[in-house]
Length: 162
Image (cartoon, rainbow, N blue to C red; front, side, top):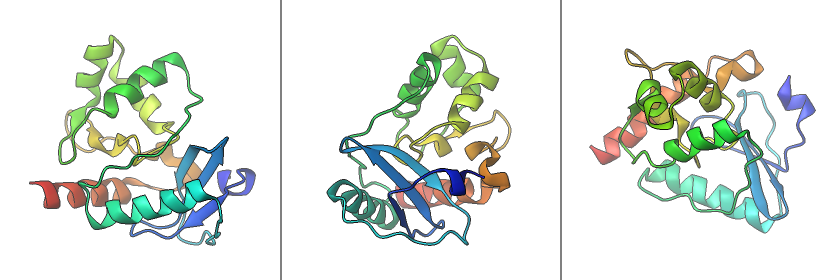
């Protein structure tokens, strides 16, 4: 289970449950949705204190722009997928198929890259849906059904944007 193996530098509360954060060289490298039972972990890191502040602002107003230095350690394909996802505006969605056509990939591999996104919310993979339905979310990490969080995030953004 990832919670036990990953050393989070902070775990913060949010309306969708605890969020685990990690940094390296003053750059955000991980944001993970955690099960409700995950204990909170305070931080004095200026970057992670700012991350917590910005995330709180986003949860109050989805039009708030999350803007922190981050570092991605991902494959070239995943980088292409995440770059496309980062362009999806608040309150909008795109399908795995639409993204796959633009980057000359397959919908399944786009979905896989979304599921391994190390910085959800900062790179809004919740805005990527199936041609019919929501699709997946967070690749079932920690054996949890994360789709309720995807629904919450989409409703949050569409209610404030639309």
